[in-house]
Amino acid sequence: MLATELAPNQQILPLTAGTNGQGHLEIGGCDVVELVRQWGSPLYILDETTLRTACRHYREGLRQDYPGDAQVIYATKAWCCLGVLAVVVSEGLGLDVVSGGELTTAMRLGVAPELVYFHGNNKSPAELALALDYGCRVVVDNWYELQTLVPLAQAANCTAKIMLRFTPGIECHTHEYIRTGHLDSKFGFDPQQLAAVFTWLRERPQLECIGLHAHIGSQIFALEPHRDLTEVLVETYAQGLQAGLPLREVNVGGGLGIRYTEADQPPAIRDWVRVVSQGLTHHCQQRGLPLPKLICEPGRSLVGAACVTAYTMGGRKEIPGGRTYISVDGGMSDNPRPITYQAQYQAVVANRVAAPLAETVTVAGKHCESGDILLKDIALPVTQPGDILVVLATGAYNYSMASNYNRIPRPAAILVQGGAASLIIKRETWEDLLRQDCLPERLMAP
Image (cartoon, rainbow, N blue to C red):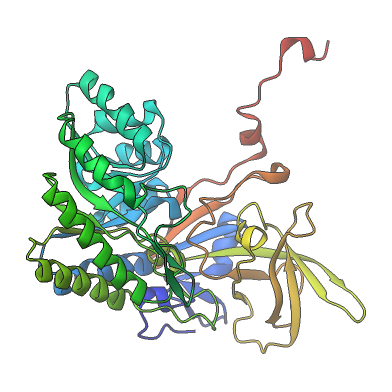
């Protein structure tokens, strides 16, 4: 169970995972079985060491491989809460936010405004006004946002620092990619619009366009598309400089994949950083351009492998000649990825780590949906009700996409480090679910 020398995003288990003297899974020096006894289940268990190590792989890789200024920005949509953000910010990372709620979380933490980048394809006037008031960078996605920002900046008596997002014409899949003219995507300006946007911006002193942003996908295992992205970005960067814009930043997005199953083979973080750094440097030198500040925005590859979710196993159903189903006390409300897009995971039984794999089972959630299946046809030891099932690599888009479907409260989350566990998200209660409900007086019982 001990971690190897792979990069954090190439691990399935957190870096500190091991087996203790009781034969139990241990993470961050904490016995997972004891954590469930103390905090209940389902339970998100976030390993601080793994998260910090991933941050350092990005930060130190840029320091080594990129000769210009650089900044790592955490894509908070992967998991946004004060505890997670506090860890990444303490590692020198900035934040990529995509809503007023995520921006408010960053503001509550006191993150420096120049380290916060506000993305999104339909920011409301209220969200844009909040961004201007805070002084963060706004990554503009379309004409509507440009035109909305001008009067807002005038009213606030400020100059809005913005970046332009455009579609780069590179579409990625897990192991292949295609180049097209421009993609059918809801995000970003069409490349053919940019000349007009550059001209328009030159006449709007309320907006200072400091950079460009492009993103090519998520859970990507190939490196070549990212190298191609740097070429497209530098070409557009050159056009913007020639048009007279004060460009000084280039944001390559994120998208590096992680290992969810044994079959997954993502590149290491440092390899991704090297490809992006060398590509941007090469194409700038080739054109005789000054190196821009390089920004990257990883999310999943920072937090994904750092977290596991612990469940308590319950009922068992054996179908003669068919599957054996084992139910757990969570499911699609705390991890919607399997039912949403058939995501696959691996799991271990925390109190039977050393037990031999003895049967193939399907792990079902407790929700009233036939599709609420967390793990299909997975090999596990012989288990019984009360055993603790731990699903691995659940740090990205699990809590962020969690819901109260069937009025099930969302789980607690704890941060583990050096044998100590700290609560970072309280478990919701049934009363919490009623807090926002309003009952009209005419419907109240007499």
